[in-house]
Image 1 (cartoon, rainbow, N blue to C red):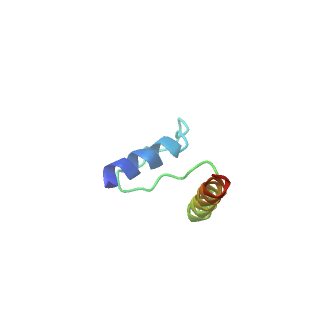
Image 2 (image 1 turned 60 degrees about the vertical axis):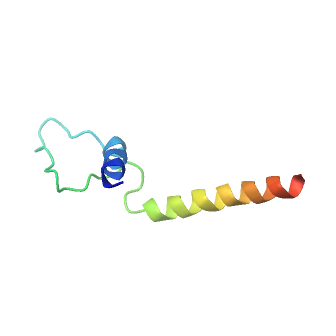
Amino acid sequence: MRAMFDSLALSLAVEPRPGRRRSMPGDWPKAHWLPGWGPIWLAALLGLAFGVAAALSHSI
């Protein structure tokens, strides 16, 4: 689980510029889309998913 989460975070991370040092394995990579807003995006996506599921279940 941890490895999957780390690979996801690394895939969202910005590639380092040539002059910067490589990040150490313990460093948390910075996401290029609004760093620090991860829980907010997650909550919004979950709310949207549940809203769509509720709308679909009511339309049946």
